Length: 287
Image (cartoon, rainbow, N blue to C red; front, top):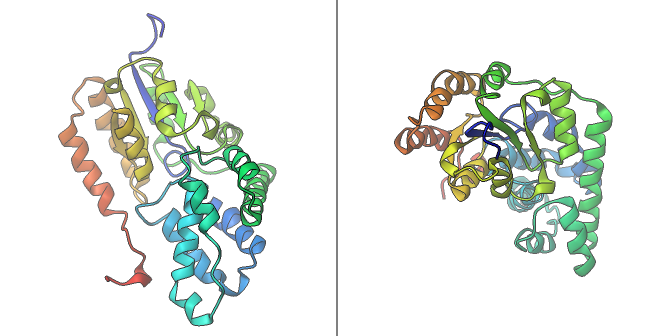
């Protein structure tokens, strides 16, 4: 870190935090392509409901793609409609072994895992993941920016070193942010190639103490990364993104720079965040 470098850093998750990508990517690319690849058309509605809950509406929102698929398949196999139809369960053991391996949950890591642990299911899953990435890039889709993001980025960049911290591939991040003209407001684009988010936060910090870093995200994985690195966290509430960005820019970011964003205030915001993301799907009941 040079003597003239900004003292503080702001780390921004991308999907669902800055860009309104979560539901569009699920509904246009990930879900229909998975249903097609794995022959789930007879139970497509149940699969979509499970995928929506895991990826958009629950405490697991924002987890890595392969972990999300594992949880989605476990929910799908247990879904009442799937049981009632006698639909054969999808295999999950090989995917669980990879997810629990401790490796980065990236396509490159999965490809390496497959060399030592052959699995037709994981081979198909890896091909699906590549196809999804290619389809998104080839589509040229331009995802919307949440209200208030541009103004906040303009205020942050300069006083702070700003970075994207995401488990999306770097080239996808550069396309999505570049299409909105946002790359000029960031100093680091950290995709899945740089490892898990705590490692990405360390790369952004460049030796600064964790107290000088603010992580902004829309999922518990972002909160967990902030906790692991030791920095402050600000939640973007799903469904209330514009209000969240207004609060960040108008109140929390200035207080963070002034050293006034304390753990008690953060805890109150995290409590609101947790209340917005349940643990159980509505069809599971209360048992």
